[in-house]
Image (cartoon, rainbow, N blue to C red; front, side):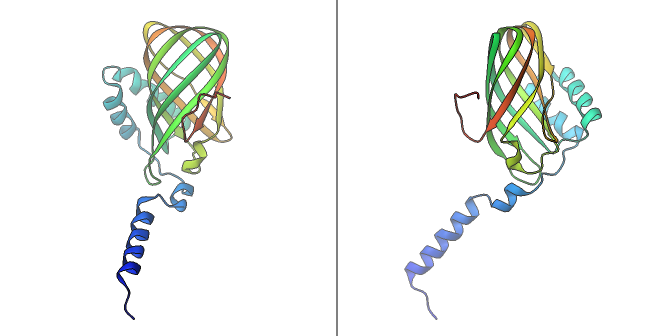
Length: 191
């Protein structure tokens, strides 16, 4: 049976569109793990001169939670005077389940004052599927630096742990309780 040009064109466009969009199965597949060396090497490229602090942060996180199965590289800004807000965006990398653009935002409350802009690497542990990042992760955060600083904390939701490692500039002092909400699209709503 012969196909018309139109049928051939429609089939080829459909095949190209299917190849260009990530499959649903990929989004549901559990990401593979990264070794500590892979994460440290990518962190060195991203952070540059603060490599020693980055390596120590990754080493501590790896000892506590094992090997991450995803990580996020991005930037964020935050400010606080008792209550605070944090907004960020970045790229989430996985070994075998694809990469995704992610955005995060969240409120905090506590004894906290100041503002900062950071380059951020987030190690993600126990992520069941790529879409499992789109939720709220709560935790306790502390900051103490003038002009610049480096630090990390841990946020959790169910069994998933997100460890933000931040290096930035600003002036910040405090301790707060809050959460980060990850979304596939940018939003100003931190709640």
